[in-house]
Amino acid sequence: MYEEFDIWAFLSGLPLGLAIAGIILYFSWRKGKKERRYDERYTNVHRQAKSISWGTTTVAILVAWAIVMIVEGSQLAFFVLAGLWVVHMVSYGIGAAIASKQN
Amino acid sequence: MILSGEMISGFISGFGIVLLIALFYFWKGRKERRFDERYETVHAKARTISWGITVIVLALMWLGALIYEGASLAFILLAAAYGIMLLSYGIAVFVLNKKL
Amino acid sequence: MGWTQDDLAEKLDVSRQTIISLEKGRYNPSLILAFKISKLFACRIEDIFLPEEE
Image: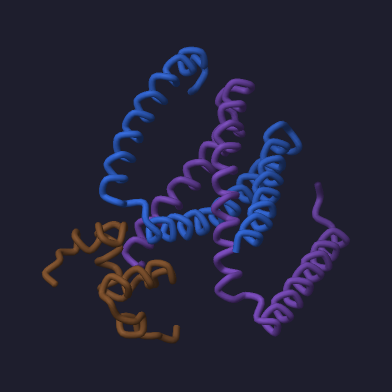
C-alpha cells in the first residue's frame, strides 16, 4: 500500500506544515494571554491531563512492545520501543526528583 | 519460543515477587502517610515533565523509523502510540475542564 | 460591588473560566489565589471558603 510513499516529498511538505501550525499556535497563544487563560487553574488542568495521558502512554508503549515481540521478534522496532520505554521511565524519575526539590 | 512448565512457573514467581514488593511498598507508605497531597502534586508534576520529553522523543523516533525503514510495523506502532498520547491528553483536558 | 465575572477575573489576574469554577465550588484555589481574593474583598479566607472534607 505504501510502496510508492515518497519520503523526500513528505519531508519537503513538513516545514510548510510546521510553519503554518506555528503561526496559528502563536496567535492563539497571544489571544489566550490577553484573556489571562494561562492561570493556575489552567496549569492544574493541564498538569493533571498530562499526568493521566502519561499513564495511558505507558500502557500503549507496553502493548506496542508486546505486538512487536510477537510479530517481528527482536528487530529494530523492538529496540526502538525498549529505548522509548527507558526514556519514558528515566524522565519520570528525573521529573520526580526536580518536583520534589521544588515542593 | 515454546511455552513450557518451567517458563510458566518462572513467570508466576517473577510476577509474585514484584506483586509482594509493591504491596509492601504501598502498605508501608500508607502507614507513613506518604501518599498525601504533596506526593500527588510532586508526581503529577513529574509525569508532566516526563510526558513532555516522551512526546518529543516519540515524534523523533517516528520520523526516524519512517526515514530508515519506510512504512513498516515500527512506524505504524509509533504513530499509534503518538496518536494515543495526544488523544488521551485532549480527552483528559476536556474532562478535567468540566470537573475542575 | 457590581463586578462582572470579567472584572473580577481581571483584578485577580485569572481567566473567567476560573471565576466560574470558583463560584461553583469546583476548583480548589491555591493559597496565593485565596489570599488575593480575601484581600480584594477585605475579609478573611474563612469568610469566603468553607473547609470541606473530601
